[in-house]
Image (tube, rainbow, N blue to C red; front, side, top):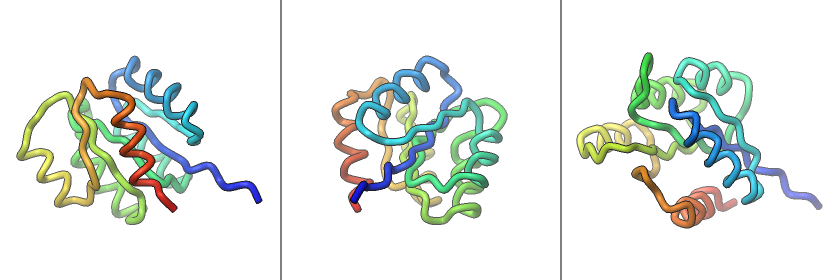
Length: 123
């Protein structure tokens, strides 16, 4: 019996981060989609049932907290891990209050990310 590949959406306004994460996480065996803004993220979440979303906090147009709140209305079961370049405790606490399950700060160690994904996506 073949196991279904778990689906991860990565939302970040930095193109280089999206490419690095997509390549790395795909090699780990996950199915990965990337988008560079919150509005596009919400549109794709309406169409595809993701298991997990890696979500940048600081983005133009719509910040990560807004995306998180709207995402949880669309799909309350999606697991959301915040990624941020800024160690803003207030924003991180707000993210947790709105349903985020973890947070990782840039620049991050890909091995740590691998362990977090493995832990959070256990069946």
